Image (cartoon, rainbow, N blue to C red; front, top):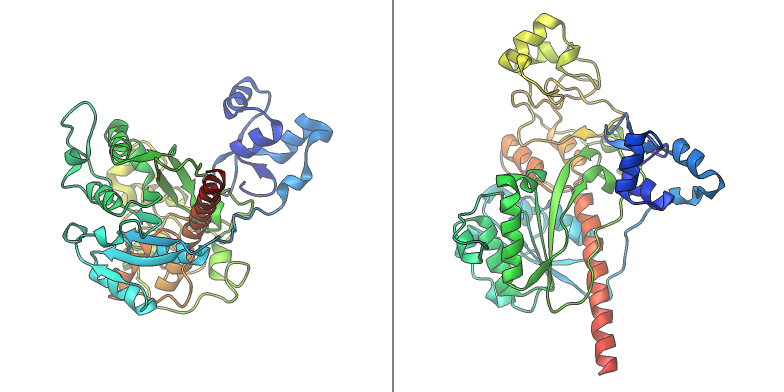
Length: 418
């Protein structure tokens, strides 16, 4: 769901009672046309068009606010790898899961974690140097945002040993050592096409080898999970193969939050964004961005300035809509990068010609205002830009609790029937 005037493909398919493929065919045949939603630019369906198609069968109650909230039936624990500045961990904590340990190699991110959660056990250093067998059968969930790296293929089916030297190997090794009920990895959308899809297939075969059934992967759009940012994360979930319980991804929310929701008082935050330090544009770039209106980008510049600013990129294909981009108050932010003033990935403030400050960055990633970041300004931006948005982490956390609750019930039923 993008706004209350539009429906996503999956929502339209659910209401109409047809498959997504049928709706795509109807779009080609002109029976029910998809459109580009103005805020998110995703292909969606107008509510009125679906209503006209269904007549009195259309259910207005479908627009009730979605909630993924669920109470845990017992305490569930998480071991997090590649924890960064804690975006996913805070989200999991907010959902009701307990972080028993977090591993991270970056010293500034570790300082951030210790500063904010002195009670968390922080394992600082290279994951290769840690033995996690002390957590065997004591942790319910292993999570981690491992980097996307190519494997060497030794045979027709990639095995764990073929992935040695990669950080996914370390993720799988820890899962094997700890034996959790469920493991969850997150990555960039590009993993889908990395090495023509072979990298992802390799990861799936490795998890299969160590005893985990992989749920069909999904790319979750952060804007559908209470995050005012067009960020996408690929989620890879493995369920231990002795567990006969289905994992379901969190339901998407109806409401889409915009930059105004992030930086001003409203539903997401009960006060406007705190003042903080931030990067600055060089004078030349500031002069360029002064000419760009809110929601505008390099094509809003005079033609000669377009050519000068873009250089050779001016003549290449593609929209390059993130370059010289000023975000509007009434739209979600584009995906934040690790460096807010770096060349040609500008995310300019709507009213002032400057990058977002550290606290504005944190708000767009849905970090709590009280979460403090350690290190230089550059280090703080890097930690925030690399993080999983907290609210997305919370929604994923709810889906894990839902799964674990079903597993508890399933176990008790098996005992009762034995």
